[in-house]
Length: 218
Image (cartoon, rainbow, N blue to C red; front, side, top):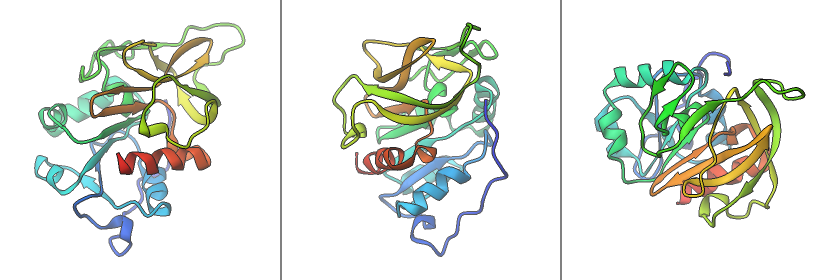
C-alpha cells in the first residue's frame, strides 16, 4: 500500500500534456495519485493524456493503468467507470504499474477480490517472516527471464523501487522478470500486448526512465 500527495494538474501547454495520436493514455479511475508518473513522462517528453471514457482510447497508441493502495478497492473503482470491457478488449500495448499490475491478474488475497483476469496468475500476501518487513519498501534487483523490448538496454539485475504488501506469484509462462523478497515473485508480467510491473519505474531512476521510454516505443 502506498500514498502520495494530491494529484497534480497536467499542463496542456507542454508537449507531454497534449492529447494526440501516438501518445500514452493514462486510465484514470481514482485509485491513487499519478503525479510522479506524469512528471516522469514530462521529463522524458513522452506525450500523454487522461482516459476517463471509452471514446478516449482512440486518441492514444499505448495505455497505462496506474494504482496505489488496496487492490480490491481499486477494482471497485475501476468497475464504476464502466471501462472494464474496453480495457479487456485492448490490442495496443498496455502497462499496469503497482496495483495497476495486480489488477491484470485473476485474483488478489487483498480483499478476497476477483480482478480483470487478463493474465491468469494470483496476487498473494507476503508472509510475516523474521527479517522481512511488510510492506516491502525500497530498492531491489530485477532479473528479466524473457527477451522483451520492455527491458531493452537495462542491465540484468538492475535496481528498481518497490512499495507493496502483496506480490504476484511467479509463473514460468507469464513472469517477464523476477525478484526475491522472502520468496521469489514476479517483478513484471507479460501476456500478448499486456505488461505489468510491480515496481515504480517513475521512481526508479535512470533504468526506470529507460523502461518507460521502451514502453513508449513498443
